[in-house]
Image 1: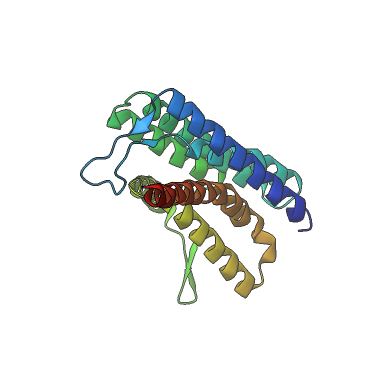
Image 2: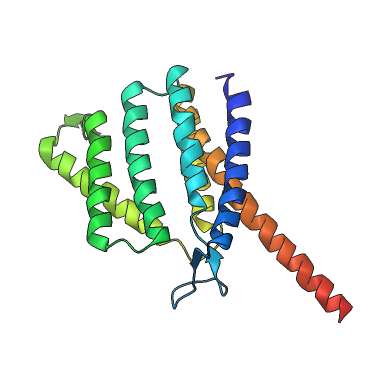
Length: 220
């Protein structure tokens, strides 16, 4: 796991630079999220910054697979599903994509991931192993799409989605540590590093706005 000492900082730096670049791109093209009744922000906010997170995460997957930290089927499944979801989201940011097409792509991404992971694995319950077969595969596909859209609703507060991803990633690392499965920690740590940049950018912007407001108050 020594490779994480150079890989994770590199991923963080690339994600941070990419987020800033996409933010300026969105502002120059007026790709903004205009607040509505369920939004928590009060001013139009640039959209599409999450693409930098996805791109750096997808770039890190082949590296982890080459180093043996992630299995090849898992890397291919996550790469294809992540790229498909990110692509439809990017298109939707630039121009509205009908919900039925987004939903179709989401199910396609879930099916791709399940194919490479051989579907839902047998589940241990009270000392017994239960194989749900095709019923489990279909249920898992619907679960993945449901979780994807549920997560997508977290668009009202800057940095909220990033903090949630970091929390889940670090929680997963903590569980792996308790179970002694330290070899599985690379993937959630990669996710954390990719998402830290969004939280850092959001915090920096909020701090800048706060300082500007304080300075303006003192000047007036």
